[in-house]
Length: 365
Ligand SMILES: NC(=O)c1ccc[n+]([C@@H]2O[C@H](COP(=O)([O-])OP(=O)(O)OC[C@H]3O[C@@H](n4cnc5c(N)ncnc54)[C@H](O)[C@@H]3O)[C@@H](O)[C@H]2O)c1
Image (cartoon, rainbow, N blue to C red; front, side, top):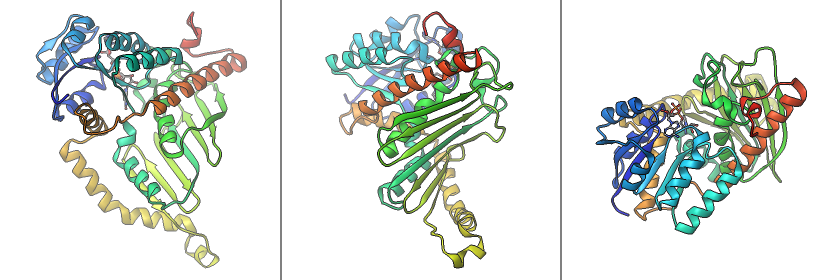
């Protein structure tokens, strides 16, 4: 498909990132938007010079070749079903679904109708993650033995933790389910499919309503690699980072500042008086700072983001120039582990603290 029409459903916070991405593609033109909140759709249409604000999802689907879904995850399964049944390609935000059975139906339908499903696993194409992947593929840190992911935030820094009304609070396990796909596809990208070995969920007196488990530690285990994910709703540092520890080196990635550093420092008694690995890594990060920040500024100037890169990759795929960006095995892995972890957080909350996310309190957990 060299030229194709795109319709976007859900015109909230993330929609502009998608619309900017489509504007830069070779073959895609956004012909219309639809949102249950018509004022919101109208506002986005004016902002991005989009000709049509649709009155219904059916009308949008009928007019488009590709439907891009940016609504909350609870609505994804029903919308995706309609899109695929009508024979349209699907681009859709993570979390794809709230339960794996919906994904299975979706995957079958797509296969039957020979349609593509691209789930927006955008951090894979973040500049700092691409840099980390390049170092790993070049063998710079040896074999990965440990991944440590930290999502340490608080309601002052995380819009989804504010108040008690955000849709992420009604996901399995609460707000963390919204970000968990990122943690899982990144782990999968670097270490392949790991199993859930352990989930520990704490409910403290400080827990905000959207994250009744305000401290969560997930351990994943493979044959040669261990990974942990730490979610905190109490940390005012707002750290969103991960570390790849290899047998020969370490890569530290700060996703917020888009900055990755590599250290291959090896211990030696003679080096310790100089400050050992702490001093070497600080000096290494200092040397990397200027070239890295120039690269960052260049991205900003060109308006490039992980989302613009996702849309460019979808464009290449639809035009027959590239492979799909999100392999179905990765989507399957993420969906299944999200469900497992989300429900385990709720199980522990109920059993140990007598509380639960609003998802578990609803009639169909
Ligand atoms: N990939 C990322 O980095 C990233 C970042 C933020 C959000 N997201 C994901 O994007 C999705 C949307 O998040 P957001 O923050 O933009 O949400 P949002 O609440 O800001 O916007 C959602 C919009 O969808 C509309 N909507 C809800 N149900 C609908 C339906 N059935 N049909 C049509 N419109 C409907 C709402 O009226 C609202 O305007 C979520 O899945 C979220 O997890 C991804």
